[in-house]
Image (tube, rainbow, N blue to C red; front, side, top):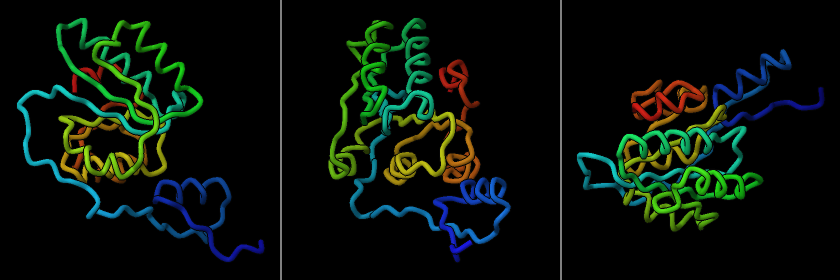
Length: 184
């Protein structure tokens, strides 16, 4: 009762706060990014060859296992795609294990943490960005790939729906559906 105003990082987080607390004193203040730091993509291939997934590794939230499943399906269909995972966290070793278990080591890399400055300068080199989160409050990594002009595929969860304007700026797939992600 002593708090005058709460701050939420997105409209979906604000709505969740209001639903859970019944309090209306919550304002949205989006996290910002410095657009000038990012290199814009200018060359596009007809078929993607190089995929990027950025975010802390936490399978129950960020869904890297869903992307691994989709990549495994694509490999079994004869597609040859490279994928770089950036980020680390509690499931980093599990990510590396899933890559090995699915025999994807030749084309899929778990590269750990890298400086944000590096990403800003190199995201444009990728043909496609994928974020398969099971839930998302905002999705800074998704915003960054879209800002760079990298075609982006997102799970259809509240935060991604908000930042992509319901799929206007990114392609969406059904949450937790590796089969639909594979099709996209």
